[in-house]
Image (cartoon, rainbow, N blue to C red):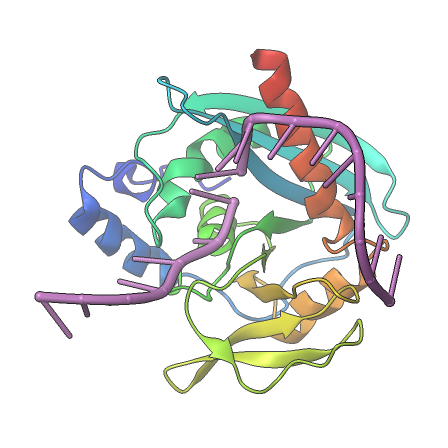
Length: 230
DNA sequence: GCGACAG
DNA sequence: ATCTTGTCGC
């Protein structure tokens, strides 16, 4: 993880500062495949308890071997959310807890699949890009619904069908159907990976479910951690 | 001003 | 995100 992170990158005092932090972080995103050999893939997700007065965030990260996708490790952490859920500012709510989980995770993944958008975000810094840049670890955004942008064309019904996600004349990601009769996934660059590379990883992590294995297991891990904590 | 809006 | 079992459809 990067040393000496500016406080505003994780806990900005207000939305104006949060916005400025996102713009600074977005400028650091590397949308190219700059990563070494991948032997370990990570899945990242967060679980919340509704009506929780404490506003706790339960982070879950799983480490899977590649190409076997066998479970190598898992880590979780709990933290009080510094801010409520506000579309466009998800990172500030979930990244702190994820960093805590990351510290105890072993082995450390070479590439992370994160539940949420990468650069398919109004300021180019969805949670996957946010986490990737802060850790300086390659990451991919795997969202279940759109935040900004629209499919460039009608998406095919067959698994594997995909179409660019466009916003303001830009291709921010790819809409990918991973399973028949299931809503598509929105894939985008997180950090140190290209869009083509990102889509390739997601497709290769398919295990018959709508979500790729890393993210699917991370979701289960985050939920399990929340239940265990009460 | 109005509507949209990841998890 | 979360509350929740069975049930309908491919």
